[in-house]
View 1 (cartoon, rainbow, N blue to C red):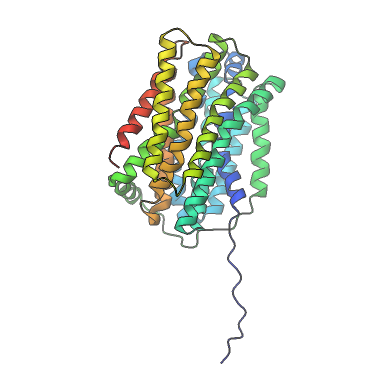
View 2: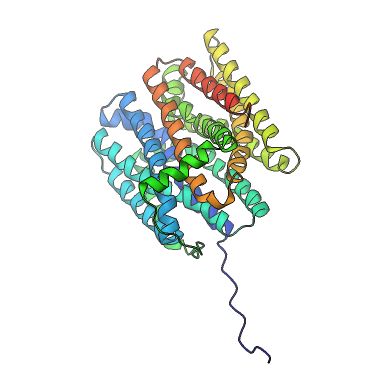
Length: 392
């Protein structure tokens, strides 16, 4: 007997451009505020070290929150958890606009980070939900490349806004953007197989299983070092470039833009090499560029030859290495266990931001108006990544 039932409706797919836009918002508030950091410190009457807490603690919140969003989205679905995160993000932005003390601003930044980190985890998880393994690798490479544009474009934009309207206007613009994005997020629910919310013990056990895998461990350590080590430079860039090298706030944004565009070049190279060069070889090549850039900067500063050009050029070389290493590390760790992609995404995000917070704490504590703290921190990060990639 002929089946006269209508065919089932086609399964809705989450459009990649919208996933990219959602994921990019996760670190936007971090990078766009960097050029305004010195102006905010002066206006609030605080020290550079205290102002740098708005970067460091943002990274701490971004790291810790990612461990929670993965399991929550597995249980309740990607879309409602994403909208909840965007709402918390918006609340933190609205609190920052009228802040009259560094304490209030720090609290606002922590709320921003706890809301924004959901975009990072859920964006990667949604890509994995709707993709086969080979297609997921390609889409993750595109996602990583697009995310690289955030730190490339955000500092220049933040510098322009801060110079024209003051540092508070940076948060006004961000709040408008997040509000509009929250309204426009019409993503379908991609989690077709919701799972019970695990207890803390079960969650920790799942993360430990991943960490016991030597291949995952190698790629997650190397990727974490690559992904956030440049935050060490971004956290002190306004003070180093303005106080030591006489740059304006707007020029600081453009200088950061040049450095992070090195990451775009490296990520583009990683995309072109995908499928042609083994992941491990490409990751190691990127790390060699990081080692060369950091060592060069340290040598230049120790020799007393620091200038805008001699600071930016080695950092660009380092950034190209980061752009090449990062996407390959993400592809490598996500392929270790496709059935644990959500946990892998959360754990990678947590470790990446935790490493970044550590790097910024080092340069903030060591801040001496020279490039030595930045260069030494970057060199240390590259050496850790090299050690991790020796025997994955």
